[in-house]
Length: 313
Image 1 (cartoon, rainbow, N blue to C red):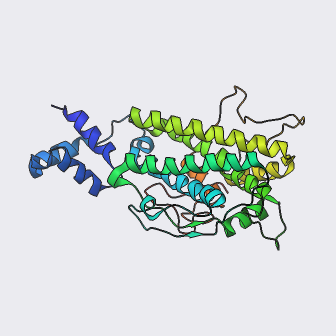
Image 2: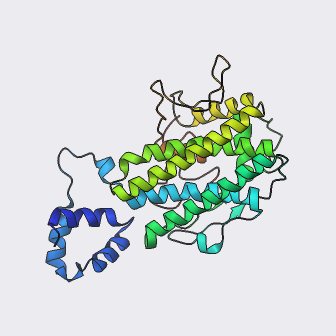
Image 3: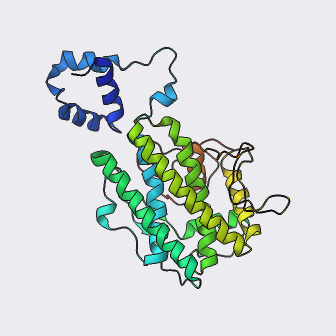
């Protein structure tokens, strides 16, 4: 029914780890191949001489699980801000160590519009978590340990928003909430764009593109709200801090141009949104420019095979 090349490709792209690949083999009716037959199929997985090992080694499940970790973080942040509670146990289990959430509480929104924004984004992020978990099935990772309390203070101090002796509470008021949201939203857009070339399955790619579009809408809402509230200086400091974490390039942009005009859509000179690698994204959420596997918003690291940040010292 299937050619050998297609079968091998399906096996390679089916799951995050060897246990899940064996599960796929059984589900696909290939377990009966036996040691010789199975070895001959699996033995055909050697990369072509002109292949890029870095891109070939990353499965769709690994990419989607990396995205799921980020969606866990966003869902917890927004859910607490609007609802006053985080994800349910049924939305958090999976492979890897299940972690708790430190911090989070309901924001006393003064603006009806900002409150509506928070409600819509919270629901979107929860649905993103549920969609990715459903798409991954048994290969989904659990929610890792998440810190949405002291991590914001560390980020605010690094950005120069507060002094070394002050603390930053993202839930204290709607201005703090928007500044905290700004830390995430642009990163989410660039992360999904950077992941797009790594996704092999077209159905998954289309879904990821859909999530990217939603994250871009969220980012636009947050950026406009911050501009209206005259918080451009604060957002520029956050932008500069992100730039200091993810390498020497100066791609990250605040909500105003150098000339003082509105900059609601951060793009390159061709008006194309830029990308971040998974390693660069982890530098930001770990709040560390060095190659590490934990820290910041994920004190014990993310779950899954993509978990080490880049070397941006």
